[in-house]
Length: 77
Image (cartoon, rainbow, N blue to C red; front, side, top):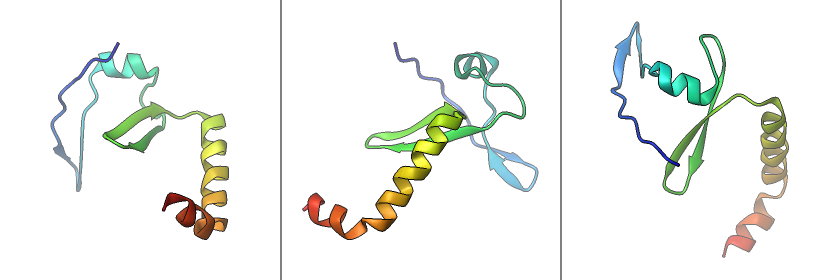
């Protein structure tokens, strides 16, 4: 089940950001001080709670993509 929540980009100090409602924090199972991942998708982005296993897998994937950039470029044709 997918639920949409509209968030407003607002000034936060010298930066801009969004305030996550407590319902969203509960769905993400995060609290103040936790880290989140923003992942690019074909149709937008996904926001996920930090997961050490996922972080390690993404690091390995980035390394492979960096080393095998030319092979991946040829496969994409």
